[in-house]
Length: 466
Ligand code: NBP
Image 1 (tube, rainbow, N blue to C red):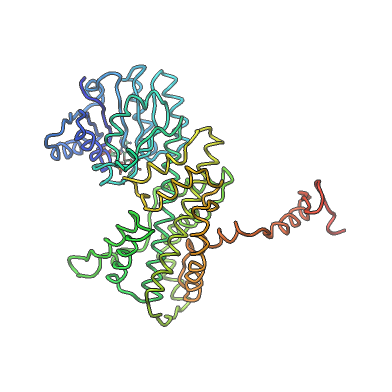
Image 2 (cartoon, rainbow, N blue to C red):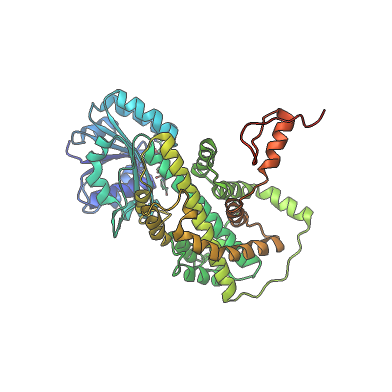
């Protein structure tokens, strides 16, 4: 065969990635379980060199050796099915890449299976959605380093480019890439929920129109919180429904769906003993939103009354921006903390400055503040990003604003659980004393779990009650 790489799975991501890679001058073989999707892609092909195939045998035969076969199919059973089929058709030295959002433990299992047969494997996270896949995503590969050498040129040319290079680098062995992508998505959940809460306050506490809210986000996108998610939020408010002429966002059912990457981040953080309350809370917020019927029912029982709106001025705008800034830094801090601990436990050898560098372009998390974060990490500042001198002053200066915004949400009975959790998380870190002494006393009381003391060395147990 003559193709430089082959892609299996011609849904949104696969089609656009195939076009992107082909536009960089590579020949790409494509395959999809349902042939119509392959035909759909071929209709989009202009000058690109793309070879459609309709059986896996034909797909494999079209690849140049050592063959590089990339899966862009739905995470889960489909990935295992294709790996099994490919293992029958490929030979030692060939490379299988899983470019989907696979759970890192699945990747651990798969890489063992693949390497047993002498093949190479890369578990690769890809972020940037449809647009990124076509114009340059952020690519997060992990697995066999020899495997990365085979696709380095293709990946680095296909990836988004920022001032310090392509948004793609080899991250580490085994599931390192998929782990980083999972945490990326966890942080993404937190950003999205923080922005949604700011929107909720703007429309309910200040009674601003969608048009006015859109303008505020447009301004935010010229500030220190400039980021892809703020940018698309501003754009969303500009779109109206062609039939009713109302802002489309107002007609969308308020039930957030999820595919699991946020939940995995939280579950994994619990496993590794890393506190990620803001990410956790953003998963919970989506879950609560899914109970629409129940919320409607409870709202009628509660007999909500409408609070008088507050006048909105520049100061309020600044406060909301500061609240979002703090919340975003906290989300990054939580995610990077998890990566740091996981890198040790899993022996990934992650370079966090490199992780942040490849998030600066192409991906959903790209944000102006990543430059500062990269700088702080390069300087080796602090175990936890929040503590770094780069952010300490900025966070300290803005936290009173976050506090005011959270207080407002409480007073106006508008749930802002991610903003308030960001605040509680900060307040916990800056507490020299937490009430865990009482928890320890309770544990010792009912379970003889013992405790340590502040005034002497040793392990103690008390008979609290005769
Ligand atoms: P989907 O996640 O919607 O998956 C659709 C693809 O999987 C189709 O090619 C479909 O084939 C194939 N497939 C399924 Br579903 N079950 C299969 C099975 N049992 N056997 C064989 N093929 C099967 O596609 P996507 O949104 O393009 O995403 C691809 C991967 O990239 C996913 O892991 C996703 O989580 C990840 N990702 C997506 C985005 C995004 O913005 N969409 C961003 C970043 C990462 P068919 O056509 O025959 O049904």
